[in-house]
Length: 212
Image 1 (cartoon, rainbow, N blue to C red):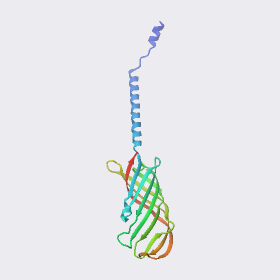
Image 2 (tube, rainbow, N blue to C red):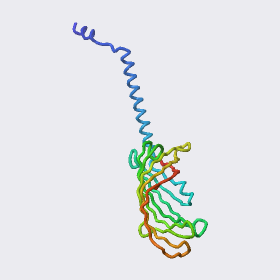
Image 3 (cartoon, rainbow, N blue to C red):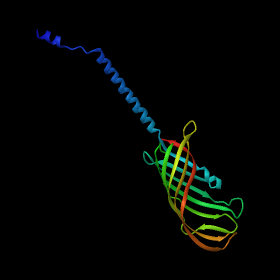
Image 4 (cartoon, rainbow, N blue to C red):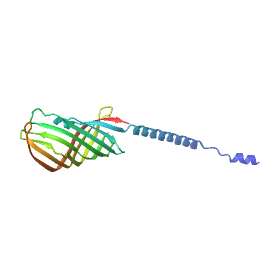
């Protein structure tokens, strides 16, 4: 009789419950696949980019830079510019050696696309002559400054390893320079210094992105 009672109390699992369990298992599998896709995408996020400012070539100033991720929405950039030659005539020259470190905060995907703001710090030595009257050369202290800039980056190309970013910035620069006569071996005339407030950064940068 006791064996009969145990047999009567044995429950049969409803078919709908079994189907539900299978569906839940399938959902977990889907979630696992999503996590894998997300992880794979994260592993392919940009590690660094090499770049050049196309606008600088309008004054024949070669330049190159590198930008790399330092956080989820932060990147650091260092750009160098060097122009060692006269331009076309002896009384027109833009000899420049400059560096520009910058920290950027991104609202989009860092190094790749979206809006960003940055803080930049220009440093430069220069020897500039724009006419036959005067030549301006940095004194013992190089030009230095600090500024804020805004920009936007966009992907180009099918492989999405190339991007363009457009940026403009404003800030302060401390400039001390010596003035010479605008001729070969022109004599020293005087020294001047200025505290400049205005545009300090403008660029259209072409970048090649190296993924993780």
